[in-house]
Image (cartoon, rainbow, N blue to C red; front, side, top):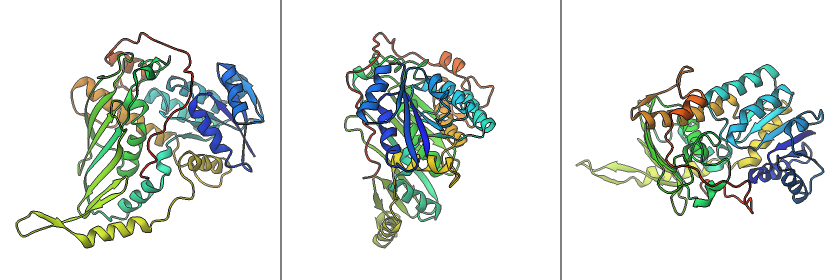
Length: 384
């Protein structure tokens, strides 16, 4: 039985607890910690946990019975708490984004290596049936050569969203919509296609006056053999989110859609019904995943702890997503195309120099410790 400590009692902590409770024979949430002790105690009561509440994560980590922790804290705290937990001999599952900088990612990876304990980064959308099916089709060459893809990470947040104390500042949140929202789709991009060669981007803040950071941005990733267009927004009513992939043999999308064309004698298109039906049948022939989302990733985390399977998203894999974000930020600031990887002597490798380089679109003037409700939305159920 793996005994779990939850560090941070905000909204996402409830998601972790619910997932751990799906594996009663293998995991038990034994502790919850939050600076505001009443939040930790309230979550324990709400979830009917047999657990201890803490207001200091050091006290939680000092408990020898705790085997692993879920870190559900603001991004600027991920590195320090994860490194400390790993040094204390705990396995770590950390929420996205992995950290505030690439340098912090490397410190976390090194702490995992030195301790021999697992470090995993939450990327729950990888564990969704539509994503798994599309990945399978790409790996099997069902589309032929991919020439272009379009990613839409479109969200909507009201002005009050940025009143929470840690949001909307480069120092605390470490970024806007690209850092805190698009990380999921940027993760899926390198899962599906690998890492690009270059990026060109632009960003702005058009709708949130209490945030220093971006709420709208566009990026184009150059893979050499294909281009990927990426849009990120916090001002999009309806929160349309999806992926469209264009290949030589057809086009497929998440949420699922498929089309295929063939050329008329003059080069204009007509529908290739046979190819479209072939792609349709291939997609639906791929089995659904037995578990999805946080449930599936936490299952992998627990099995990796028991040495039953390798961890799917380790620190090195989680770092790639942050590298994409830093490339976007550097390109937007410089107005130029930026090559990957981001070097260790680059200003965008370390948090202090990255923060100093970023524009402050607005001045954060309002700050509250907590909202009256912690309810959150996790976006559309990928492809459903």
